[in-house]
Amino acid sequence: MAKVLMKGNEAIAEAAIRAGCRHYFGYPITPQTELAAYMAKRMPKIGGVFLQAESEIAAINMVYGVAATGRRVMTSSSSPGVSLKQEGISYIAGSDLPALIVNVQRGGPGLGGIQPSQSDYFQATKGGGHGDYHLIVVAPSSVQEMADLTALAFDLSDKYRVPSMLLADGTIGQMMEPVELPEPEAPEFTEKPWAVTGTRLQRPHHIVNSLYLVPEELEKKNFERFETYRQIEQAEVRYEAFRMEDAEYCVVAFGIAARVAKNAIAAARKEGIKVGLIRPITLWPFPKKALAEAAAHCKAFLSVELSMGQMIEDVKLSIDCRRPVSLCNRAGGMIPSPDEVLDSIRSLSRRDKPCLSADGQGPSLQQTGGAAQ
Amino acid sequence: MIVFEKPKSLTDAELHYCPGCTHGIIHRLVAEAIDSLGIEGNTIGVAPVGCAVMAYNYFACDMVEAAHGRAPAMATGIKRSLPDRIVFTYQGDGDLASIGMAETVHAATRNENITVIFVNNAIYGMTGGQMAPTSLPGQVTQTSPYGRDVLTAGYPVKVAELLSSLDGPEFIARVAVNNVKNVKNAKKVIEKAFRNQIDGKGFSLVEVISACPTNWGMTPQKALDWIDEKMIPYYPLGVYKDKSASAGAGSARPQNGQEVQP
Ligand SMILES: Cc1ncc(C[n+]2csc(CCOP(=O)(O)OP(=O)(O)O)c2C)c(N)n1
Ligand code: SF4
Image (cartoon, rainbow over all chains, first blue to last red; front, top):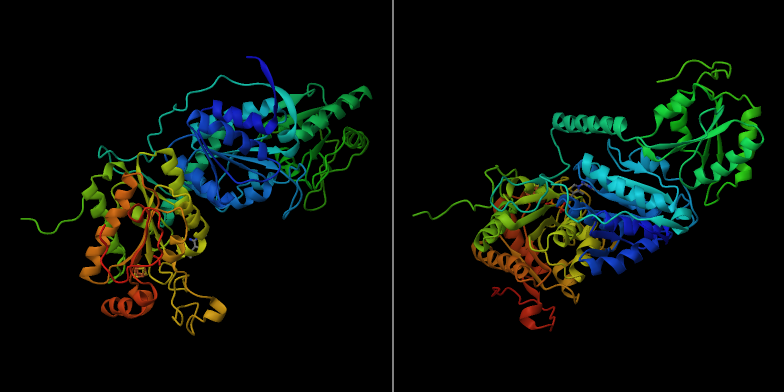
C-alpha cells in the first residue's frame, strides 16, 4: 500500500477506523484535537458514531457503555483530560472490557502546559485510577507507529479483555510523516460471548459489573485478572534494540525521547563510545528481561525522559539496581536536544556513579556478573 | 385465575430493600412496562450507584452497572452502539441530580433515545442518610443535623422542572408511588416513557417520588404520609414536558395533581 503524509494524531484516527472502530467519544483538548476533528469528519460517512461528550468523564463512560456491548470503541485526550477519565478506566478494567484510550501527553501537573511531555508514565503504567489493575500501554515513536500500535492496542485489548492505552506525546501527535496504513478490517470480528446485547429470551441475562461485595469473590477476581496480566507479561512485551550487540552503555527511552536518543547514540559511536538503545514499545508490559540481559554486558544505563524521571524506576527494578542508572531529562514541555543526551552519554562513560541502595552501598561497577533473570 | 404474579422481567432474586422502601414498587412498575411492551429480550438496563446498585440482579434483561452518576453516559454508549435495543437507566437523586447532573442534562439536551427512571427519595439512602440535592428545606439528615439550611446548603433541585426547560428532551414527568392511585398513574407514565423510546421519540424521564423510611426515621406508613404532606407540595406531580403531545409548545407547567393520560 502506498504511503501517505499524515499528522500523528490523524494516523491514530485512520488506523482506528481501519481496525474496525466505529465509536469515538471525546472532549476537546490540545494537543490531540486533530484526532477528534478527523473522527468528526469520517465517522458519519462510514456509519460510525462521533460524539463530543460534555466532559472527559462522560466520554469515558460512553466508552464503557459501548465496550459492554462488545464493539471496538475509543476515546482520546491529553493529560488533564486523562486524569478525569481515571475513574471510568478503573471501572472498565474492573469489568474486564476491551477499549482504547489515547493520551497525547502534555506537560503537568495541574493545567500545566500544552507542549509535549511524558510525565503521565506513572499514571499510565502503574494503574492510574483506583484499585489493582493494569492497562496494556503502547508508546509510539513515529507517525507510522501511531498507526501500527493503534491496531495492536485494539487487538491485544480484545484478546485479553484488558483496556489498552496508547501513550503518545504532543510532538508525535503534531508531527507529519509518511505512513503506510493497514488494509481496513470489517467492523465486526471477534465474538464477544459476554457482551450485553439483549437476551433475545434465548439465554440468561449478562451482567457487566465491577461490584463484588463479598471480599473472597473480589479477591478471586483480582487473582484471575493478575493471572491474565502474567500471561500478557510473558507474551506481549515489545521493544526495539538499537546498536545493542556490542554496547557497553545502554540508553533507555521511548516515544519522541528515543528518536533524540538515536541521534545522540550515532554521535557517541563516532567518538568511540559503545552505546546502544533499548526502546520500550510496550511500556506495560515493560521489557524487563531485555534490560536485565543488557545489564550483563552494559556498565551503566541512561534513562532519557520528558519528565522528572518516572520510567527510570522501572529501569532500576528491571536490572535489580545492579548497574548505575542516570537520568537525562527535560520537563514541562521541553525536549532534550541530541547534544544534551550526548553529554549525558559521555559522562556515563566517564563516571562510575553507583545506583545507591537504601544502605548507601550501591553495587560497584566492577561487578559485571552473570545475566540477570 | 391468576390475579397477581411476578413480572417475567424480574428475576427470582430476593430484593434487599428495607421494609417499606418503595424501590421495590418502582422495580415492579418498570418490569411490568417491559413485560407489557414485550421488550425484555431486547432491553439493556443500567444500574446506578445507590440503594438500587444491585438492580442488575433483579431485572432479567441484560444489565450493566455504571459508575456513580454516569448511567446516562453509559446508556448513551450502549444506545449508540445498539440503536435498536431499548436502554434504560434507574438512578437515585444523589446519583442523577448531584454527581451525575452534567450527564443527566446533556443526555436530555441531546434527546438521547433512552428511558430514565429517576427515584427521588430526598436522601442518600445507601450511604446512610446524608443530605441529597433533593432534600427539602429544613429536612434533618446525617449531614444536615440541624435541618437543611438553604442559606448554606442551597435549595433542593427540582429535576423535572429543570429538565423541562431544555428544548431537547421528549418527555419529562413526575409521579409518586405512595398510594394506589399514584401507583396506577406511575405505571402508565413509566410505560409511556418506554413506548416513547420504541417509537424513536427520544429522552424520556420519569421522576418517581419514593419513600426511604429507614433514613427518614419513620415508619413505612408515616413515610408514605410524609410524601403527601411534604414532598408532593414541593415536587408537584404531573407531566412537565411532552414534546409530541404539545408539538413543541414546551410548557413547563405541571398538570398539578392530575392523572396523566399517556
Ligand atoms: C464516586 C463515588 N462517590 C461516592 C460514592 C458513595 N455513594 C454510594 S451510594 C451514594 C449515594 C446514593 O444516593 P442516591 O443516588 O440518592 O440513591 P439511594 O441510595 O437514595 O437510592 C454515594 C454517595 C461512590 N460509590 N462513588
Ligand atoms: S435505605 Fe432507604 S432507599 Fe435504601 S433500601 Fe432502605 S429504605 Fe430503601
